[in-house]
Amino acid sequence: MKLIYVASPYAGDVERNVEYARKACRTVMECGHAFFAPHLLYPSVLNDAVPEERQAGMDMGLAMLFRCDELWVFGPHISSGMQTEIAEAERMRIPVRRMEMEERPSAERVPESNTGIACNSMQPLPL
Image (cartoon, rainbow, N blue to C red; front, side):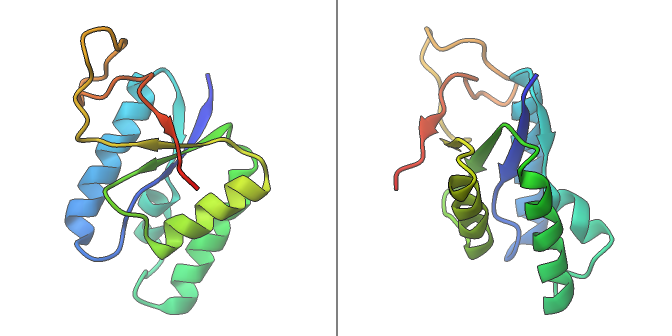
């Protein structure tokens, strides 16, 4: 079982983005992997509106990145926080994969998660 670092947008429409991140984590789990989503963990104890606390959450998430086998990027855009996570993963030579939640897999793409994402549909993140 791989440990997957989940990167997806958080700021902005937080309620919608948290729900999206939960679906992303479920996708990872249904693909047979464990997930680590720091943007679901740290805001529960830190105030993301306070810059020092937001940075502490980012730093703690990045401190765990080295333990992860891959970083999966979810979402229609890459936020500044996600770009920092991607850059650090690349620096550490941790594979980075892009996953689009809206993608509907073809019949030959299996296994498929309950979220409608084929577990083998990840594409390398364009540089």
